Amino acid sequence: MLKPGEPIRAELLEELYYGRGLSVHDVSEELSVSHHKVVYWMDQYGMQRRHWSDASYLKHNPGGEKFRIDLSHRELFLVGVALYLGEGDKTNPSLILTNSDPRILKLWIRFLDKVCNVSSQRLKARIDYYEDLDYQMLLAFWSGELGMSSENFDRPTLKKGRAARGNHLGRRSLYGTVHVAFHDSRLKSLMVSWMNDLLEGKL
Image 1 (cartoon, one colour):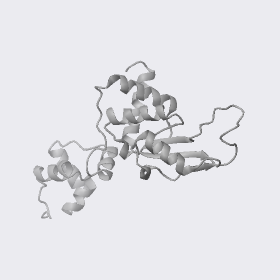
Image 2 (cartoon, one colour):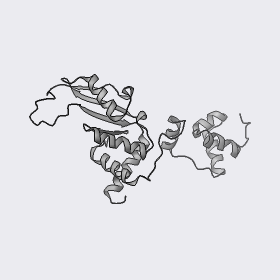
Image 3 (tube, one colour):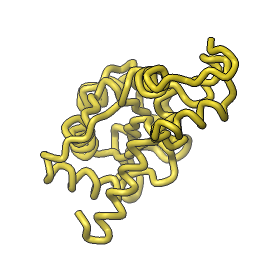
Image 4 (cartoon, helix red, strand yellow):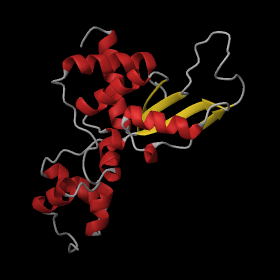
């Protein structure tokens, strides 16, 4: 605890703010001083403050970054961005790609692994299926195809209505549809930026 009128040492601020990743509010509580005093001394030392979104990210990810981008796999990077542009969820804050073709989903998982350093065991999946299909069979199929533990599959969505066999178009998958998700708003923001760059010919 600081004495009244005592300055906050630069080394202490650096340790709390940069070293431990505390927010300005957290630093003020740690030192039992006002928020304004912390801001004042950070400005005096020329210490750059984080954007609120970065501060929030650090607070919810105390162990560090959830992902690390590797753009050396350029072809896979471009394929992954184009794939999400066509098949990905644009509204959800998480990265979610939905498809019934295992090959497309495996390509998406390979993009996350090689480009974003997010292994399949850190992903979540959900199966949508019709009532004439056996869920345990579907779970075993998709778990094996995607290389994901069955524990990483969330509660499925059971659809009522048309049977999987005998529909007039003959295009229904016998294995349902799967959503593969990585819950991280920061990576989603990067993907949105990449998609815009791809559309504008900047990639």
